[in-house]
Length: 92
Image 1 (cartoon, rainbow, N blue to C red):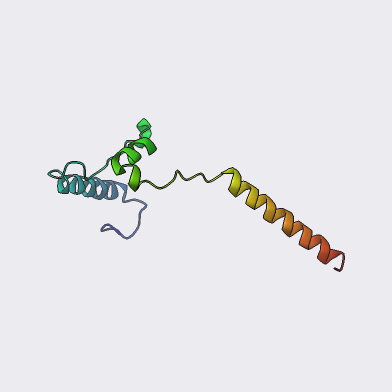
Image 2: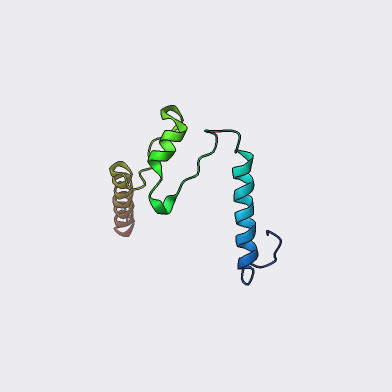
């Protein structure tokens, strides 16, 4: 991968290849304004910048991994599973 057989001990090579690839991508889009989004995640950029870049029609709903509906579904599934186990244990 990236000209090395192992990751360990090749950190300098991997960083160099990574940085060269990023620069090649940036250069590819240099004359295409508005076609490349570069986010500075450590600085706090993220969803707002992505939505602004894609526009409202290109943005899926925000991914709520722990939404109430999903939680209720999981809790319902757990309750049903426990109910089935209790019935099986009781011989039903």
